[in-house]
Image 1 (cartoon, rainbow, N blue to C red):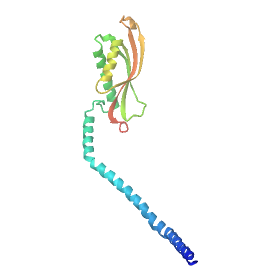
Image 2: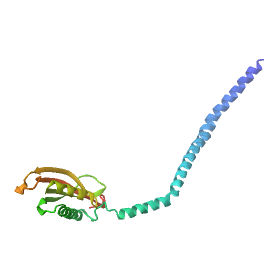
Image 3: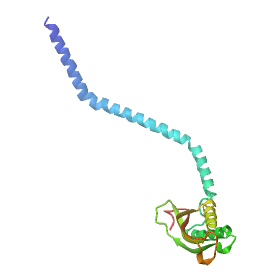
Image 4: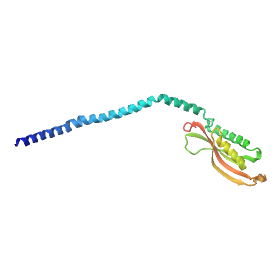
Length: 196
């Protein structure tokens, strides 16, 4: 009867010894690295599948890129000039033509001052800015601002400041004249980091 417990102890000891031998000699040296390699293989397979799917999309992406480049080549949102000085001069010419079209009476809307300004903000494209001071009637001013911001290339009005002058220089204009200050700006297609 005592042989059965001794045999169980021996078998338990052998099993324990084999378990310890497996952990110390096989698992850490063989099984654990193989499991880690299996995870790496699964990760690499997922990455390869994702890359194959991206490569399969290449013709579609090239077509889309060509379409975007064609659109940008004809994009009227940017000023066509190649540098800030030329763009600033073009802004002034655009302002003068808009003013002459906005008012049938020459003295009703006039440019008092126009000064080129440097942009102090970090932007992806070069900004050409002109600080403008006008003396206009309200109806003409509304027409000028609308024509500037709705035309092509895309221009923006910022820092708008209005001061009412009821009878500027005694002209007797109905509704008086408004003294207007604003920044008129547009963007050049050249990226800012390339521009001088």
